[in-house]
Image (cartoon, rainbow, N blue to C red; front, side, top):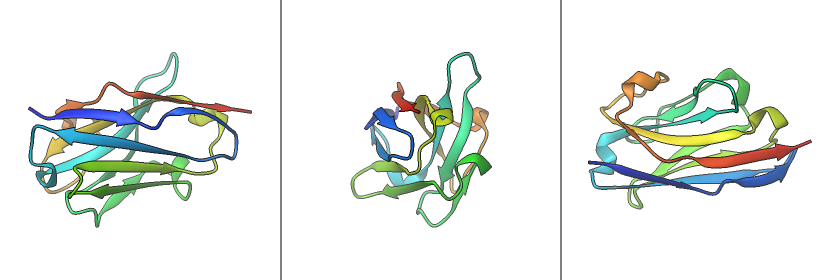
Length: 124
């Protein structure tokens, strides 16, 4: 059983930056592909970005391309989300997710493990 723990959320002004971390335990991290999702109040959880097991393949939702960067450190069992040029529309709870496999996915249904989430609030 894989456990995921997010950290790094907080309150930031528009245009600012945050770096989220997600530490994994209980499994072989390098056998997992990882994703970040977010859920704003009153909205469904949505895909943000994903990364394959080795870190050489990534995919982003259009609204964050050029602003967010996903990366991973398999030696530290951690995936990161660097968020720059933040906008109020980025305000949400951000969730880390994991699944076994060599590809990656933008679909919630493909992920087996989820963290508890970390709040990101961007003020205007």
